[in-house]
Image 1 (spheres, rainbow, N blue to C red):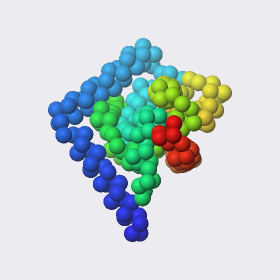
Image 2 (image 1 turned 90 degrees about the vertical axis):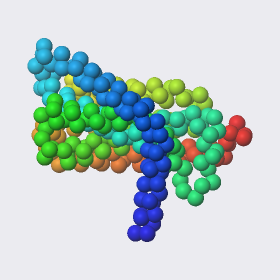
Image 3 (image 1 turned 30 degrees about the horizontal axis):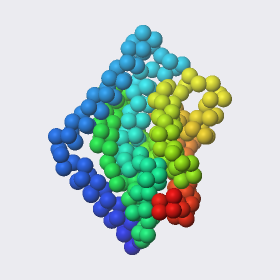
Image 4 (image 1 turned 45 degrees about the horizontal axis):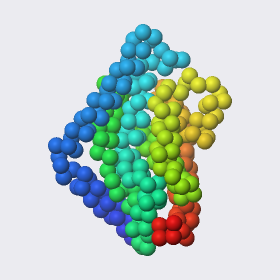
Amino acid sequence: MSKLYDKLRYVFALTRMLIADSSHNRAAFWMFIVMMFANNIVYFTMWAIYFYNFSSLNGWTLADFATMQGVLCFGFGITFFLFGGSWNIARMVVSGEMDSYLGRPRSPLLPVLMRECRVAAGGDVASAFVLWMALGKHGFSDLPLLLLISLGAAAIFLAVMIAVQSLAFWITGISTAADNLFEVFLTLSLYPQNVYGSAVRVLLFTAIPAAYIGFLPVEIMRHFSWPMLGAIMGAAVFYLCLAVFIFNRGLRSYTSGNAMQR
């Protein structure tokens, strides 16, 4: 228990430092949040126009799309508000900046992830509640389940980012390509996935785990199922553990050939 308490204190200390450092300019802090909030509402409005002309999309209604976008916004927002440093893993590897995190008594992954806060992601989190409550037609009784599956989505977002960024340990100059790979994953997640055929869905449940954050959450809220909830949470644990494994394997290679030797 003492070890767990020590780890939690470490995480909370990093979180306090992250938020304090990001909010020193309060005007900019809130401006970024409001702008992202507005951006999400505009994106939803474009789909609202579609559903105004076509009442459903393969059985999904506008409320279902609002549920999906809310889960994606919350998962994406909480991930990159707290772990914005994940965007820069590849650049740190290439530049040798990762050296400053080696030799510490703890694993370097968490401080690397929490070295930066993507302030605008706070607007994603805020917009999720509007999408769920006002547009998705959910009540307060639905919030615990929505938050749970959104945290599962957050874990998958983080896992994909860590995995693609960690390719820099083996592939030189992949920084831009890593960003592009994540953008592909994000794009697939944002589009209603009930329109895809069976072959594409297999891909979205395996190599590109977008279905766990875009398709299953909506289906759970439409027709609750313990197996589907277990699939989301199990996928979150599996892909996050896989991403940490990939990072640690890459770090082992990096420590034997760091920036001084490259």
